[in-house]
Length: 434
Ligand code: CO
Image 1 (cartoon, rainbow, N blue to C red):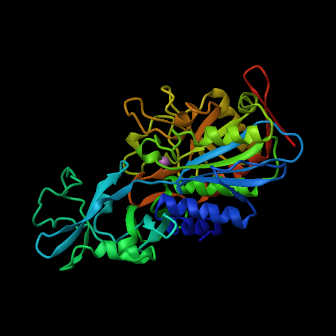
Image 2 (image 1 turned 30 degrees about the horizontal axis):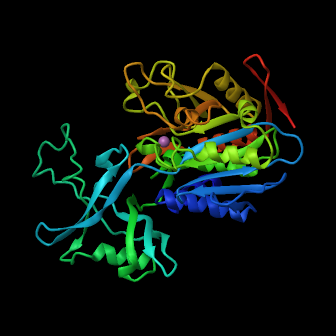
Image 3 (image 1 turned 90 degrees about the vertical axis):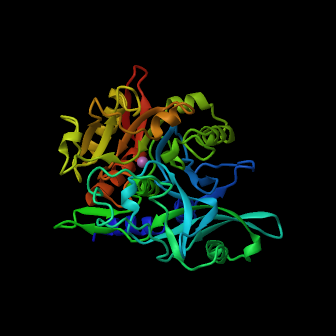
């Protein structure tokens, strides 16, 4: 398996929840010498400084302040969350018979059937009582723990003909047999390293435990959970870390709650980015509107590859292939922010560094999904392009993408950060280097 694929799969395996994903990026930033800023503190920033700030433990913004002359921000953005099942506060159901089950509800729009008949576990964060007050702890039960069993074909002869799924009945996981209520609480308290009476609550999700893998005759595919959007997050993050200095201040954004509409404190529809960029400008004595007008954002969220068994869902002329390069997304209704100029700017940067690109538009009778770019633009209005990596089975518990595409986006992100981009005053952009 290629090194970059292994590194991506390691990140995914270590990121069973958005809280774990953000913690992993934060740890990598600290290891690379980035200083953690706190939102409630006054920021003092210096040229040559490297910083990051977290919000809610599930979203994060990292940035560097260049030394010497610079203008504008060069940003990439991806999301930390994936569709899953979230446990309700009273999370256990006793019965029927001697079953102990868990009461969970869908988080995001998943392909429900893919969660059946596979080992699942529980991860997220717990709120615990401490001597000082209330603390947040990452928890991962980290063992094959749960299963959501299908109904046998012998009992449901219609199972292969247009089955519908009711999350209330069909998607209820089994935790064990003959077990007393309170088992989950005991396991979570153990994982949080607190006595049971000090466990006050949790944001806990079911997750697929099986680690991802490379497959295909030549290992040309990467398959596993949460590729949307950890594949893009991984590629943008490493492009950010590895990039030399370009013409602007490099920024990497990881937002939470994309799968449920982004309208949270830690989502792209919150104030996190706006306030962070504003504070950077204020700390450095710069004027936000001038900096923002000279800024470019690459919003990276996975895209739909043409499907091998259902090529008819792809639009004619807009049929991304796995390993075909970074996908630039277009939508007349502006669900994707790309326009002629922002798309051309990104595509030209890719051409110059030898990274292939492809284009995506939804079939005109299919609404498609939305993503971060246009939502973030309602708060921080920047020249933005929506891109992604082609994948199959988006929002399945087990997704498939092109193994080479991770590297394509990583190289594109690095080249984007290293470029000097300057508005030409007539609707275009000059591309230079520093
Ligand atoms: Co996504």
